[in-house]
Amino acid sequence: MRRAAKNRLHRLRFDNPRLCPDVGRLEGARPFLDSVPGFLDPTSTPAESYREMSVGASQILVWVEPPRACIRVVGRAAVEGARQFRTLIQRLESQGIHQFCVDLGECRIMDSTFSGVLAALASEPEACSSGSPGERFTLINPNARVRDLLDNLGVLPLVRVIEGTTLRMPGGGVEEISPSSSSKSETTRCCLEAHQFLMDLKPENRQRFAEVTRLLEEQLKG
Image (cartoon, rainbow, N blue to C red; front, side):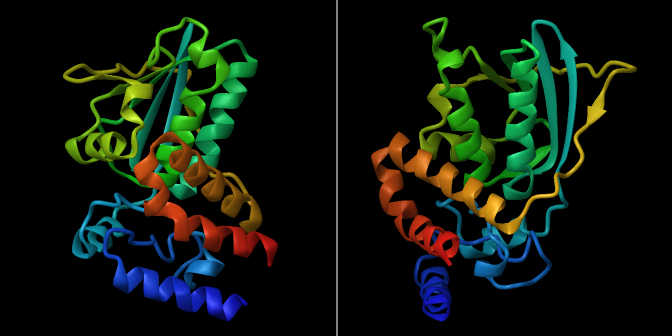
């Protein structure tokens, strides 16, 4: 079954250029089912997608300015940082922080796993307490590629976007979020849940990610 799943994924990679797996970002250059990938913008070409893989690893910085927290994502907003981002938001919520400004001015690319995690967090009950969508998460200065991805996947209506402003980082009190030690199954489940949420969020996403989620489900069962 495992070999058959790999073969189906290879066919998906080369037969469908709109879904390009981010192979090898988590554990060197190991195959897809051994290194759970994120997925880049489903509207990108293969050449664009492979260029994006060369972007350096992400860095996540956070500082708190009650009643909000400011989070700066540098480099890639991708699968390898999606779980730490979700864990960070949950930790801040436990401290009474429920508004988040996410500075994407230095974020070059975002994949669909990170997009799905962001969408799920923005849709939690706390996000709707005020009755106004987009008040929980404010995205600062996303580039055109990131904004188009969020729009294509149906995430954009869940957040507020501000451009042309700068979040000033304080001289102290800034925390760098260290990469979490995640098991392969935990990362796979995060990737699966993110794509399942996107499929529920927008009908077009069902076709985009149907094969992806099926393969991830097979991996979890194995």
